[in-house]
Length: 272
Ligand SMILES: [Zn+2]
Ligand SMILES: [Zn+2]
Image: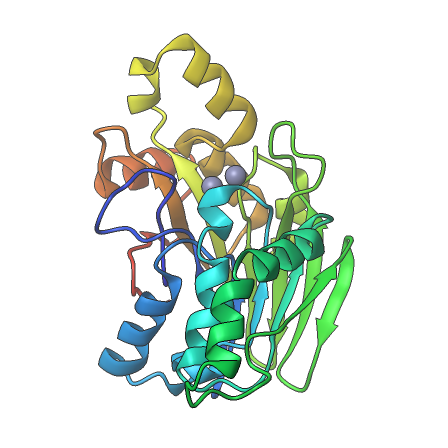
């Protein structure tokens, strides 16, 4: 977990970003703010070469909310300055290509000066290859098959969860979602389900307008317990936790009132 955070400015929780690591290759899910530095810390302290800057080459966006994408220009440009020659491959819902193109335009002054201003840069690594995808298999190589599935995230027209099928594990990342049968079907006994959650007890103290928002865009701890009992993951990892004064243990104990499998509240730099 490179970042387990939300839009909240919790210094211990970087913006949402998950790395599926297969050998020396990383497959990133979302690009929350802080992603490149969190990856650097994991690469160094946990000796994960796949997360070295020049190896950050592909990212799968669940949806285009800013907390999941504010690190995208960082992921496009910082690894380039650090020597990555390959363009960043970005996959995501409709709007992804437009965002990537506009970001490249927004940073055109920077890119021009680094290319032609005397900096010893390579001439290729700043570019982005963006792919607007729809549900179904969207990526395949010798390590992994990646499948996108639609999840209900409030008024978003398109938000995805992703399934990563590797030689030895199936990993499902929910993205931001209201409780959904699509996640149950995608997991269906999977090895690891990484799922968003909010504290259902702390929720009661939220104002009615926020309660209306969260209950249509996100998943409560009790709802997640019910969902996990049907999805049957071997390990449930909570992320994108909304605590509102609650804690990891309060959320986990709420999930466990409905679900008796293994549950862990994800933390930044946690390895599962
Ligand atoms: Zn979010
Ligand atoms: Zn969202």
